Image 1 (cartoon, helix red, strand yellow):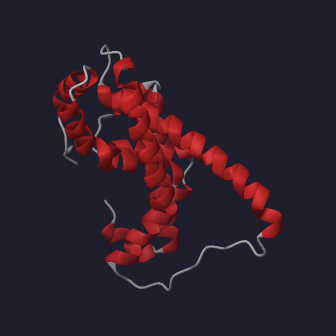
Image 2 (cartoon, rainbow, N blue to C red):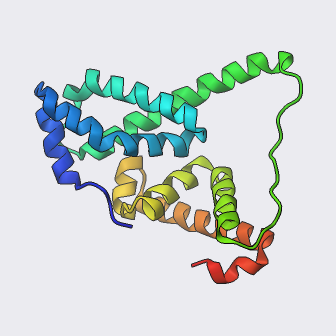
Length: 192
């Protein structure tokens, strides 16, 4: 998958924004907004929560941009900021949910969809199974397979060993494939 930005261009834009150039900062926000949202969504799983996390990251970005150390890529620094904010958001959400549980009545279960043999159903299955992956596998799969980062870039962003990234990627791909085929054996010809 082709990336929608060039990391070197983003680095240059971030450097200008870090010096107080408001036009550069606005351009930077327009460029990275969707990426931040996607990273947040992968971590928190809910579009509304991801939107809130994205807004919080943008506020932090404005306040902390001058602290970005230019030794590494801006995208790596921004990813770490987003991951930290999403983790904090998830912890707060878990505390709120635990506090509200005694007053909430029935817990909501997952709805199941009727099995139609079509691409839309397969996409729904992939989404569901993707969100069921362990968080680290979900992050790695999203960054490499869906966003087009190399395993080396992903390792840098996640501050992991490249072989650990590749292992998580392999586990995630195998898990998705086996769960899809378990649910939809007829999907074999649709899978890569």
